[in-house]
Image (tube, rainbow, N blue to C red; front, side, top):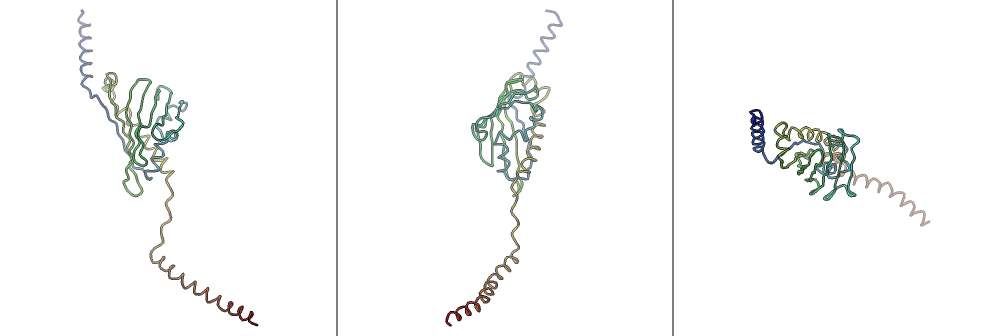
Amino acid sequence: MSKVLLVLVLLVGAAAAFVATRPDAYHVERSATVEAPPATIFAQIDDLSVWKEWSPWEKKDPAMKRTLSATPSGVGATYAWQGNKEVGKGKMTIVESKPGEKVVEKLEFIEPFQSQSSVTFTMAPETPTTTKVTWAMDGKHNFISKAFSVVKPMDGMIGKDFEEGLANLKKVAEAKKPVPPPPAPPAEVAGDAAAKAPAAATAVASAKAPAAAKHAGSKKK
């Protein structure tokens, strides 16, 4: 064996040993505050048919083919896609759905590489008018993805997409939030209105009394 070949074998072996030391699992997470109630935000996430309104991957391939299940929301709903090299091919399935609280999906990538991960959206009220939305993804590395993560970690690959998606979701949810009811009148105004009501009724009754008496008198004649 030549010295050059021996060196290459040693380098490959050292690289493989290093890759093997990389973490077996990954976690990517981003959060955003949205000025909308949890129910409004939940409706945009749980219904896979409206993902096109805010998903960060829709812009990467406008010609992407989408296939939705007959029922696009709730447990069992599916969304399959196939597009260019930037979006690849895959499928997501809702496996848990708690209105206003959480949506969990099984995410399966088929192309350009095969992998499976769990995606979780959680909604937690921060104030009476705002909600904290957290988008997280968890999965396990195979040897190839471990090797790739040495060059670019999963957080670096997906994190910016999550940030863009949450920014889009914020715009959509805030545009669809319910219109708040008009404020209640001050207590003193309400009290004045209540006090005026009996007086108004008395005045009406007094105005009707002479006319009623006159009518009764005309009948007696």
